[in-house]
Length: 271
Ligand SMILES: C[S@@+](CC[C@H](N)C(=O)[O-])C[C@H]1O[C@@H](n2cnc3c(N)ncnc32)[C@H](O)[C@@H]1O
Image (cartoon, rainbow, N blue to C red; front, side, top):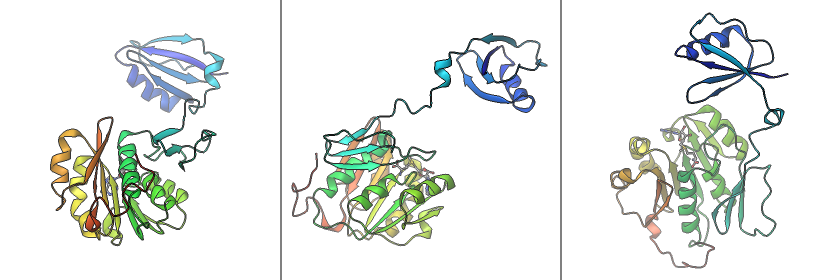
C-alpha cells in the first residue's frame, strides 16, 4: 500500500536528499511550501528535528493515473494532426496524421515552437511540385520535423541532436534515416534544412546550417522568441518569405533559390 508523508520546514529539501539514500521512495511531489514523499514502507525517523512530518491519506484513484489521460490529438492546421500512438485520430480527419510517441525527447507537437515550425513547413510544402530530395533536421528531438518531410515524400533524411536519448527516439521513429549524436558538422548538405532551437542555439549553429543548405528547397528556423527574430533571421543572407508564430515562438521560412510563391502556389492543402 502506498503511503504519503508531507514534509514541511526549512530543512525539508535536505531531509528529502537524506530519504533518497535511506528509504525506498515511490515518488515525490513538490508543493509550494511542502514536499510530499510516497513510499510503500513506514518513513524512517528523520535526523532533521525542524522538519514537520504528517502522514496524508492517499486517494486510491490517484494511484491509477498514468499521466497519459489528458493526451489529445493536436491540430497543427486543419489538415495536419499530431498525436501519440495511444490517442486515435478523429474519425472524420482526412489530412496528414503524424504519429509521434511522446517519450523523453522534445517534440510531441504540443510546444509552440514545434507547431510554428510544422506550420511553416506545411505551408511551404503546399506550394511545391515535388518533394525535396534531402532534408537535414538539426536538433531533431523526437524526430517530428523530419517525420513530416518523410511523410511528404522526402527520401534522404538526416538529423542530429546533442542529446543521446533524443537520437534514440528519433532513430526509432525514422528507421533508415541517418541520425547522429552531436551537431550538423557530421552531416552532409541537404536541400531542405530545419532547425527548431533557442535563439542563441540557432545563432551558434547558423554558420553550419548555412554551409549545409543547398538552397534548392527551404530553410525553416523555429524556436525564436519575439526579440530574437530580427537578430537571428538577419544572419541568413536572404529575407524570410514569411513567419508563423504559435504562443511566444516564431518560425521563419526562407524559400531558397526557387523563391516564393512557387509556380503551383495555392494547389496544396495549406492554410
Ligand atoms: C526545441 S527542441 C526541438 C525538437 C524538435 N525538432 C521539435 O521541433 O520539436 C531543440 C533540440 O535541439 C537540440 N540541440 C540544441 N543545440 C544543438 C546543437 N548545436 N546541435 C544539435 N542539436 C542541438 C536539443 O537537444 C533539443 O533536442
